[in-house]
Image 1: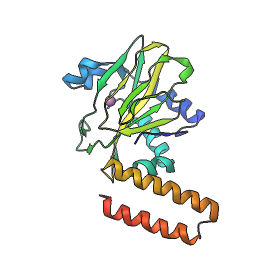
Image 2 (image 1 turned 90 degrees about the vertical axis):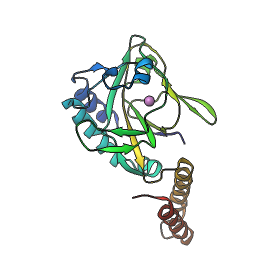
Image 3 (image 1 turned 120 degrees about the horizontal axis):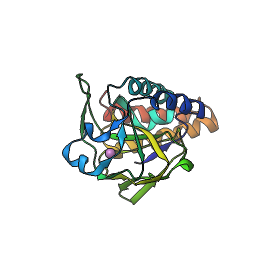
Image 4 (image 1 turned 90 degrees about the horizontal axis):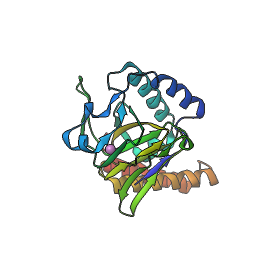
Length: 227
Ligand code: NI
């Protein structure tokens, strides 16, 4: 499932975060790559241990915690500390798949990457190219969202970032280990959750059908979740 999460950060939140990360010590993105992605990747990143990356990552995690849509769609168990990248002057990231297991350097933090996330942090009119192109069962999806909006997609999918031919594309990227490992099961839970919310909004939270379906949701989650 590929889902856009709008307004993870409002314009003031984007400006605050950009103020933090733009002042960081940007470095060649291949400092952290394995040999296969090093062939495909041309960009800059903030090193994981950079103070600006840590502070900025905290801003992103706080914003995720305030997004009910993110929580419903991802059912997060663990979120990798958000990282930051930027592309300019024709830089791009060719077709690749993200690593299944992510380790945080210098700590015992590790997660299984079920979902990949990109939070866009530059106005789309300020740069050309830079679309995130994701292959899913319906073909190629091309994603370029307003600043503050995020896309979530299965970490198992092949994806690439198109060359940035004008301006600078700036984003936060990270991975999520979901309580529900299976993408199809997670999608069913998400659709059920959104339907229950719609019924409750229409008929009130005390509606008997809304209450029964909420029970179905939690009983499916009990069967499928690792918590
Ligand atoms: Ni990737």
